[in-house]
Length: 301
Image (tube, rainbow, N blue to C red; front, side, top):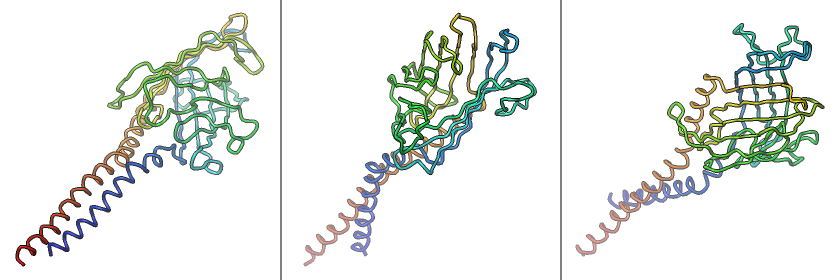
């Protein structure tokens, strides 16, 4: 019986060590990738001074932004994920029932801006990919990070895509902050009075002061605030906007980050640790049972 148990433990120990080593060496590269089933709706709200083109007056309005990002599984693969994004900014009329978007000919004239975009990123480091195999020729070429940070984000400066400038700008690490029990890294993006196309075919001056809170484990954006100013060439205000994730959005992002982080920790931390340690213990006990039994039989002989 001791020999049988010993061989069983040796087999079990070998199995656990192999599983543990696979989880440690192979699993991180497989699970630390942007999931292909990504389908997110992000809500922001705020206030803005906006030029009314009809009256020529600058009006103060409450605003709501909705960003819908969905993975295109047809063109995505093991290494690259393709996204379709729609962004709509509308006037919040205080009714409590503001739609995510409205048509350009909305009778209440609530539409501020609306845009659609197709882009691709590396599933591991989250940097933009401009290969024609993934994005159409009409898609704007991007660089740097677009909609998330890499897994295991660092306390360093990252290139971050700015769609108004059409180039990547610095997102500088600005500190660590705990949000609802989740440790996040805060990054600061600052653009000061740069010449840019502030409206279709209209050149002007553009400024941006943005803070982005990142879950360092998954690289997901947890919170974001931005102060954006667009001025005409003569310095008159076109848009002066303060926008941030809603409280409900932040709470949902925190819960998602905690859940996804726990899953990653299980697959890349707990499983390898339990597998290797448990496997070694089984191997040692199994070997002891086998060789101790042989030693006693040899003494008896």
